[in-house]
Length: 198
Image (cartoon, one colour):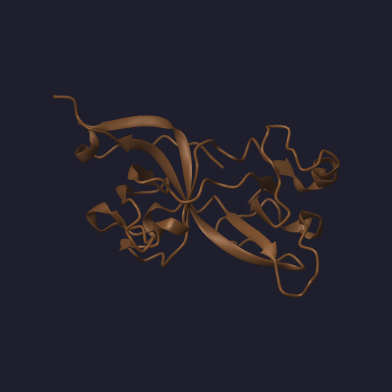
């Protein structure tokens, strides 16, 4: 993943608190500005890239009972891969409720408001000023979750095609034999909105 410096729009000056860069893994229609599926979104509170394990080092990860050097645990039933061919720790699910200042590092910075889950478990979200998921997606970041499919084959990072890494913007994460793949859009969080002091 990457760290960005982004300008903060005027609406955020009073109650904006800059935080170390975080990342949201988002699903849904890229053209959407609101929805009720934030419960399917995840949060990396710490940049998972530098904490990742290269595919070429997967045997070492297995030999260490799935424990990565940075302390996270590899889950063979569902593992994450990013655009440089790094196996990543899973994000936190669901995305905690709150107000996130998000950007794709291009032209748009917006306020993402995430609600607490309702009685049915649905979790609402909105982006301010008509911004869409596409507007605040960082094209350079790629993230996908790989899980076992119904074929009965093993789903292993060892089967990932090494030749596609590093990936260029616009590419989709590769298929891996024996795996089902879910691609996620990556939003960069540069700050949070907090209660203004009186």
